[in-house]
Image (cartoon, rainbow, N blue to C red; front, side, top):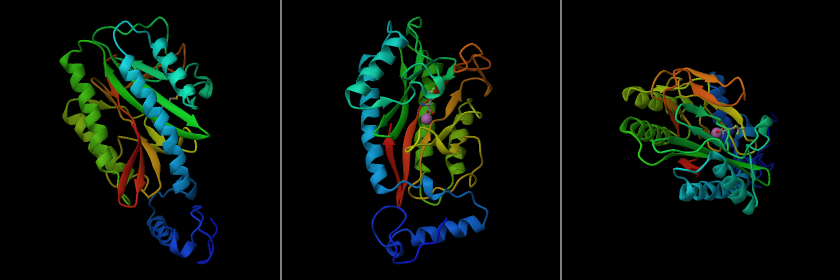
Length: 290
Ligand code: MF3
Ligand code: CO
């Protein structure tokens, strides 16, 4: 990384002099690096201009999820959800990020009951009374990425599954409260795993959140099973997802060997997930997509 002179324009693209912009930031990052803290590279720090573009992408993503929320219910197939997502995204000028991503065949992930994540929409899967389903939407707008997911309860859902859905949402909310400048990713993981475990649930460890914005999946990997005060430093401008997968039974997961996408709980117990996209700011955080 090149050292800038005080009078040079800052690397962040603000147009301001380095001295008055990210000079103090770089100094602070350097200090953490010397203490062997995992610090984000400049490429992970979003500029104000980039944040504006990513927010436009997220506006579409949220609108698409809102539309899904209006229509989802018993008797609908997951392929119909996929059609809504595709139509609503394209209508608003975006492109669904999952479509053709590493060969993924559809525009959205729909993960029902024991499916942990990456469920593929299908004409054969009809939503039925008592199902819980995660709908995971991601949008590309002019090259900028947004990503968030919600749980939906279909008809009459039993109390155990309702609790799983509620506690998982609380995990995300509690994790979000830990997003503040100069904290650690592990602070988020700590409250999430604690809250899940206290309620008798387990946290998936193989799959987690990720940096997002300029790519679908950027660094860092966001684990929910690491310790407080560990993991990447939360520097202002870092953007990532909080998307814990919480299982009612054991934490083990398996990937379907037929489609190489669908992830199930090993013990086939139900699993829930909520996902938000968040930006670390100078004084806390901002939710970008939900
Ligand atoms: N939206 C998922 C995430 O939160 C990624 C899905 S990849 C796909 O990271 F190809 F399955 F869409
Ligand atoms: Co994600």
